[in-house]
Length: 157
Image 1 (cartoon, rainbow, N blue to C red):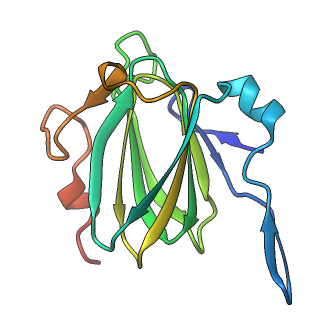
Image 2: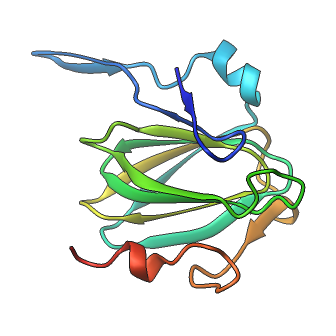
């Protein structure tokens, strides 16, 4: 289902879509694949308006899968784990409609953020446990200690 990238534990995938004259069908995730990476504790849905930036967010213990059901986001991940050989590595890419990726997963200690670069987006989160504010990691989107610059990444081209 997924391919691994330069940050240890991160997975990216393009889901198969079966379309016909009635619409389409898409398997988002199969439970055996989900359990091999994290299990499931909660599923959440977020509607994100055009131009909105949501960053930085991570977990101390949870694994998270993020699925862009509709819309297009510029996603970035940064490894903040001091024990990781990929510490301070980052990845950014377009996720969602007309992209090679529409779901991505990341382990505890990897920071995640995104900017909606299209129309309204529908984003589904699947986490390995339920919401606990004490389990979250949060930073300002423009925190200079994080090796990713949203201003540079979102400049018009």
